Image (tube, rainbow, N blue to C red; front, side, top):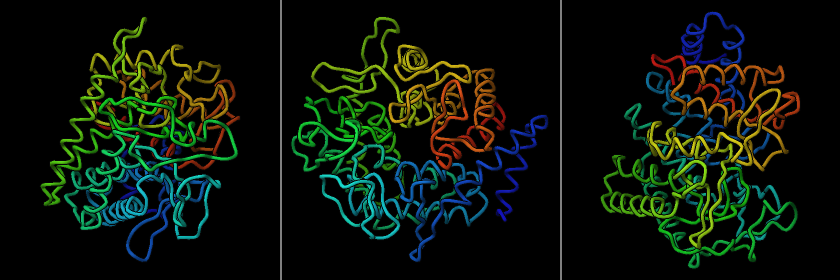
Length: 420
């Protein structure tokens, strides 16, 4: 049985769509999916959150999975404690290894693959993704902002936050980094070139990133949307009531440095769309025009809080990534939207469709995207990682909680006065 606070939100949101019983049914299933299937409370009060059909906790995914429950935490102390428990778990994992992206529920040595990197028994995968360090900070800030609860902001949180700043700062000069990663078997997208060091880069003020939020290797290792997420996360960290002025000053200074690097190197002139944000750059004159479905993405910048929905450079970038100029934008018989090289060719991601809706200023566009999402679930009543642009019954990952949570968040936003 779902908690009464969750049932109440389901009823309230459903009431906003009285003529749409299928929407009400899918919202209820997706909203409850993380709660019913992925939470693993621990004896220490922390909460382990698996992604769904992969039995590991990603720092990024877990934050996104519980994000819709912030609305419940405002009035239900159980959900406040739940989200605080997730933050504790995330920051404990950061303290174990700030370069890892996914962790086991216990120190059992299970892992995705046998990789040439500095593994440990807690680590499921050790792909360094800058957004992994940002997600716990943003979740902690959002919980405190929404509820005033600071129970997770303890000495362990502060220590891990210092480690996050040290790691992001170190990676502004990757030549000084100890991090290496090679996957000895599998596709090239799963490993870093140059004996695991990554492609050459020049200094930009941005922080180096090994892998995209898709877990695919970066082509050029300054991942612009991840650095934008870091700017927002560091400023959020500085706003928390931690009582550590040194940490606050370091966070604000690092955010300013990253932001200056984005302004100097992340904006590029495109022959068709004008000044846009590149997806990746290397500080040596190379840039990559694309976007990936996974968040942080260029499409998600207003959602992340980096810019306004009507920011001119964002609008130009949005036009690019939602066009054929983005090699991962697909048009098909069932849908059009952004996919990822992480999944089969011609696949569209529900996460990207939800994010397109959450960052849109057009109610018509939002409702059209909602109808597309409802029509591409392959009759399962849940979202998937991706589906084929012409045939939604061909899909990947039937149990992918992040997509379900983001769909629920999109519907909740549409139910608010004024919409998303």
